[in-house]
Each structure stands twice: as structure tokens, then as C-alpha cells.
Image 1 (spheres, rainbow, N blue to C red):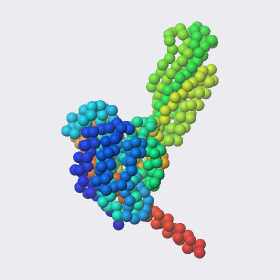
Image 2 (cartoon, protein in one colour; image 1 turned 180 degrees about the vertical axis):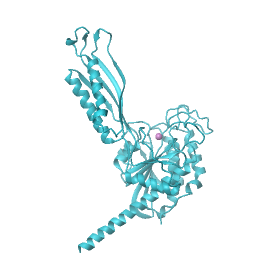
Image 3 (tube, helix red, strand yellow; image 1 turned 90 degrees about the horizontal axis):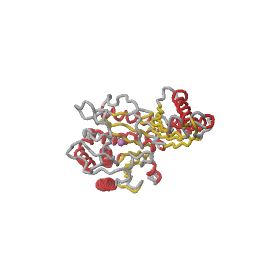
Image 4 (tube, protein in one colour; image 1 turned 180 degrees about the horizontal axis):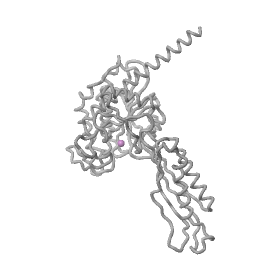
Length: 414
Ligand code: NI
């Protein structure tokens, strides 16, 4: 029988909210989550859940072995805070000036510990394994913590068949879940270009290579990537935000630099835009007798949910929170390090409604006044835990039906 965990989050809400407040008071920046990591390990020991640590320095992997054989499902929570001075006046405000959990990662860690606790209590009934992935350094794009954890072989012994993560979301009320198949969060790349021509007198342009004219032509052509190369229904942005060059009115500029950003929702679009970008900048510059130096910084890739696992989250949410709990949501262009896990393993990322009731305008994530509604915490605990249970049972059922189909084929063949 598949365990139903409805109500279990509420039972441990007080303990987990208290835990969240402790994390909130002691925020640690990306790559320095030493005390946070220690506290996570203490809690896992207290719950009698085995773990290993040292992935990307402070990362922790907890493992819950189910009582029956089956597949492996991972849950991920990010651990780091931001270099922001808190201005919320909450009783449990950050005790560290210049550091704040302004993105709710304190709640993510706490909810994962809560989910771990209730999953561990019901582990004998679980067909398979649960991995608890506590990930550092989510906020330092493009390095992040996901890739370094995988480089440190976090999944060498246990490989996830499916992975999930959730993020508190101030634009949705408590009890609502934002999830969709396909793009959830965008990719954000940055670039800097230096065009080098050769200078001269403004009255004798034929003796020079005017870097301003070259840059102007390059920039105009770059705008054709979005307007002519990208599918118009696939939202993409290419913006030049800064341009610098030249000396005075009667001198031909020898050098121009410009900087900008590319935002995309699909990884194949990101690759295509990047290729076109290089070919236009280099091709146009060369054809006009100039040289171009390009610095291109890949940010996090887009966070793309697998259709199957996004629907899994929806069905579980409908069962726990009602049929209206997953409104249609548009993807968000913010970056998310979880995307790197999703490039390697199937899964889904979802938003947990955490709006403060009565506020006309919610303070956004990364704002010094950002707060979250702690009523979201038991919801997040239950949803994560139930998604794991439902996924393990779904994978088991799929395996059984695959085996019986195979058996039928063999029987027919005989
Ligand atoms: Ni965040």
C-alpha cells in the first residue's frame, strides 16, 4: 500500500519552523555554509538517517533505504544566503550584518529535513531509495554548487532515476504550486566584445578602420538573431547594455567595447544564439577589416522540467491540496542551478506558494525586506515527501508492467 502523508507535515511544523528560524538567524554565503552543513548533519544523525559529506566543500547527501527494492528518487535543497543586510524587523532576523536568507534557502533546507524525517518513519513501506541532496553555492552563477557536487561524485554510489526540487514563491498563495512541463526558469548568459580597428584623422577615414562603424554594423546585425533566427514563439532577449569608444569629434576611433546579455528558455536556443553571436561578431568585423575579441560567459542553463515528472508533481499536488492547486504559470527568466542536475537526470522543479496574506505587493526574492509565509512550510514538507512516495510507486508499477509485457512477448514467442 502506498503511504499517504497528508497531515504529517503539520505534525512536525513547529519543530521545522523553529529550525528554519535558526538557519535564518545564521545565514552563510555561497561556499561558506559550514555551520549550516554541520546543523544539517546533526539533524540527520538525530533522525538516524545515514549521510556522507564534503561534496563541493559543504554539501551533504543523506540516504534513506526503503524496505523493498526499487528505484532511486532524489530531493534537492539549496543552502546558501545572500550578501544583503536584512530589513524585515522580524523577531528572528539575521544576526549577521551583510548576510541574509533573502531567497528562502533556509526554508528549503528545513523542509527537506522535515520531508526526510517523515519519509524515514515510513521507509519500510518504500520500494526504493531516497537521496537527500543539500546543495551549497546556488547563488554564485555560473559556477554554482550542483556541478561541483557531481564532480565530487555525489551520485557515484547511488544514482537518481528522478530528481525534484522546490523553491518558495512569493507570487503564489500558500496551498498553490507553480509547475509546468518544459521551461520553468531561463538561461542567462553575459558577453563583452572589443572591436579593434585602426585610428586616424576624421577627415581621412580611408586611412583608418573606424571601430565605431564596425561596432554599429555588428550591433545592428546582432539584432537579427532574435528577429530572424529564433522561432518567434520562443521568447529570447539579446540586449546590449553598455557601449564605449572614441576620443573626440575629429578622431576616428580605433577601439569600441560593448557588453550585454542573452536570455533564453530553451537550451537548444541558447546554443544557437551563441553560435550566431560568434559568427556575426567575427564575420562582420573581419569583413570590415577589424578584429574582434569576444568574452562570453555561460550562465546557468535553462531549467527544463520533464513532462512526465511535472505531471507527477501536479497529480500529487491535486491529491494533497485539491484540484485547483496548480494554476497555469508562465516560466520565469531568473537563473537556477538545479538546471545542471536536470541536464543529467530527469525530474522537475516547482514553486511553493509562500505569499504573505494582506500585502498589496509581495516583496520579491532577493529583497532586503523579503519574508515568507511560514504556513507554506508544512505544505512543502508534505508535498516533497509525497512526491517521492508517488514517484517510487509509479516507477515500481512501470517496471512491473514492463516485465509482464516482456513475459507476454516471450510466452507468445513460445
Ligand atoms: Ni533561490
